[in-house]
Length: 479
View 1 (cartoon, rainbow, N blue to C red):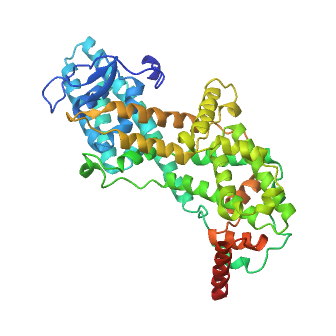
View 2 (spheres, rainbow, N blue to C red):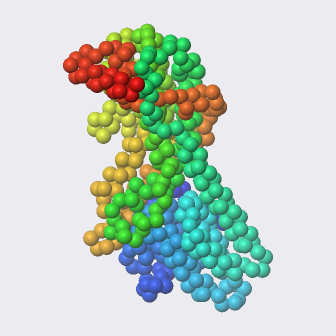
View 3 (cartoon, rainbow, N blue to C red):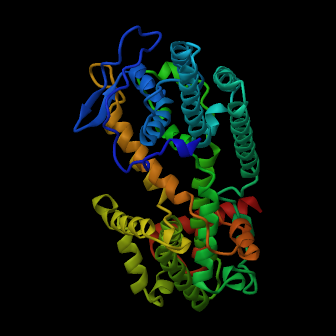
């Protein structure tokens, strides 16, 4: 089916063609309200935008528009309600073509092929829109009507059956991931009680599992790509759809909580705390210095790979107060490489340096011939903040009531970039031993980190002395 309808690459250009002019059943008037600037659609009523989504005999929507509208529509209308409206337009189109001549039958089959193509793109890109019974019911009703367009050889029926099977498999896979995700290690485990005595120098640490910064960076990248692969565009759109909008009362009540964003955010916190734990629990200063320099090298390798999220997590871990206060340790560290990393992650000018590096990695990825060169893993919390601020500074609707589609073009462009990066196949072989350690090694709470830090290098001022006294009192009370 796809070969008969060539598609332009998503976001290669904005669709500038005019509205199809078809009649929306419950409007009773032609689609006259979409507004264009420089050939690009910038606003329109919900009804007109829905009408633009549905194919006709001589029109099929651009993939860019399909992606952007289906992504943003959930802010204004439930997926099952949108499906119902699409079904109504399909009925109208089908009735206009049902004349009975061979020519009209051919047109009907062509129309059916386009509707199936739309449904395939919808179910493949946004499978979670069909998680509830209402959406599946609407999908089946549209499929039943379209099947009637080709009852002679059953080709349409076979394609729809395969599409439905693929959809159910996608929903099942996502459900299984959510179950696995429940078993993920929590971001902070309170290990304060185990620090009543100093840990043994023979205690297992990351260096006993992996002493090569490049290999550890590769295993971190493997974990990142595995986590990212389970984040879907509709998950990211929750950032917008959970916010206030003019249609808040309509479509916020049954939005499923997204576990995948939480899981990925927890991974960042886990890695930061693991880095701090590995450094603070080392007893001897020389070994502690080596540990700090090791993580600096790991962060540097992550940067070279294009894994900015792990890099930021490692830097964040080393900048936590229990680690940053270890002045005697840091005085022995060769900090030149660390200074370069911090320069890349400098928050001034809205992380200008990082954004420049990210843009460079994205350009490298576009022209890459190998998976290693294609890797781009952005700092996830900054990516989320960008979408959030795009949402906050631009209204969902214009003063005339039309949907501000220009806003959603930009949001969907950023989300599409992320989806492109997450589809990169990891080129590194999984090392089960290293990954098991990274994902299950004990991590200290902030309190436990301070205890370990003060035991390694005593308090240096009144504030630190008071904090250390309070922590020791807490430990005695627990005993």
